[in-house]
Length: 257
Image 1 (cartoon, helix red, strand yellow):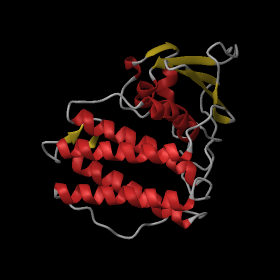
Image 2: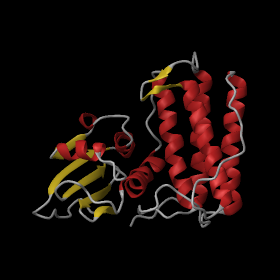
Image 3: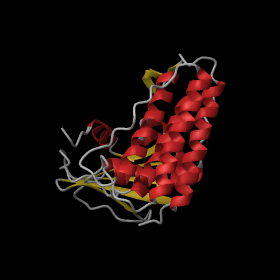
Image 4: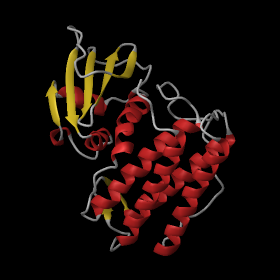
């Protein structure tokens, strides 16, 4: 397994991406602009969402091991821009405060119970880097000025997504398959899909594929792979090989169904 980012790096990146998020919101002509990558939301909705996410995870980390997500103290997000941005900054600081107080090893509830990511505050921090990074991109593309994702967060983000959002013990409902993701920065990951579920591993690009499995691969920068995995860009935006239907099946698959 590749060495993941250290906890202080995760905290730094959450703050950096959250600050970039608010800077982009501050530059928007209107908070009523529709977000093309989240078409059901305006920029105002997106700020409300990320702030609420930060507050919920702050409360959840503080609560420790539990059967469900903690509910934070009620705090209605304002609509006026300056007040809204201050509320957003306070939300981020609540999250940062909880993570700093309890450190990376505190057990807590997470929604990814059967994944390959632990149910710890460190895993929460790792996922919140991606949350802030992708939503910063959402704001930037709304403004018509999308920026490349930061490389260190994006490289970690490919693996984080595969380990947290894809790995599961739920049975893959199709024929066994293997999907590889190759980042041009030099790392590759394999998602193995079978009746036993889905499991991701870091693999060398030369690793062999079992002869009896369907196969597909995607190759792009780590940032592009993260955007692809989060549905911000489509498979035609990356270089892919093999059976394209596997990507469609992955997107449509709901292990909880």
